[in-house]
Length: 297
Image 1 (cartoon, rainbow, N blue to C red):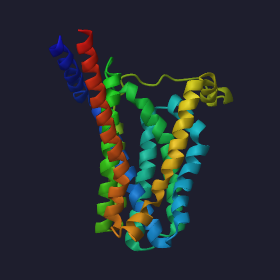
Image 2 (cartoon, rainbow, N blue to C red; image 1 turned 180 degrees about the vertical axis):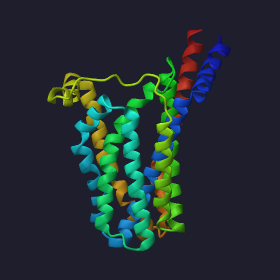
Image 3 (tube, helix red, strand yellow; image 1 turned 90 degrees about the horizontal axis):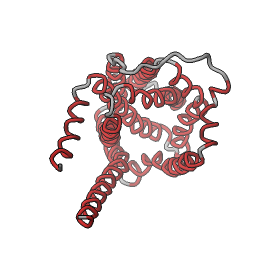
Image 4 (spheres, one colour; image 1 turned 120 degrees about the vertical axis):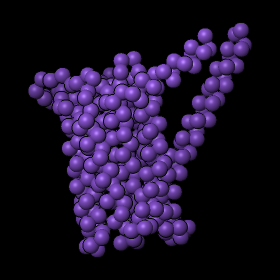
């Protein structure tokens, strides 16, 4: 029996790694997350280098949040009604074009803070539509019965990208300020092509024309499920308090005197801590489960 239990997860993992839609989706998601994390480091460092203002650093997060908040309902409806991979491809293509503009402006020394803020607004709008579309694609790219394993592997890949992306962005900026933007554009283009190669196992069925009721159906669902409202509220406060990471360029530049590579390491540290904590909790859970099994025997 133990051998069967051990063999089953490895067999399911092999099935996922041989499934082309899942591979294309996972690689596209990894490249897109790498690009976003690199951009967080490059934009923060560049804005502070141009302005030396903590307030302007805070505005980077604000200008990204506003379109995400305004477009939340429309973005969720688009993910439900339209072909999700096409929505995601359009978002990644828009992000790649903005990355090219940022690289061009940085290499040409004509990029200003206001133009960076405009780019951040577009990034926020693209994320508003791309995030729900990407999350909703996962059940359609894994084989039947392997959703839990696929979700775990996809989450692990995202965590890896969140750790590696800031470090790459910081080192690339230390080499040349426009380098991370060029890399971001390239990664988003590759992610767009990978998503275009996906053949959905379970495509989205056509739905009725949009109405106000369907647009705000999510609000009604949350109101009917208090547990979900509590979870969302808890996550909201965690995100608000975690926004202090926007000020890390000040610590890297003025306090630690570490340069952009140091900022990349600082931005990667929270994700590394989360990964280590997850591994610790998993080990503790496995140990507790083994102890309970021995006690029952």
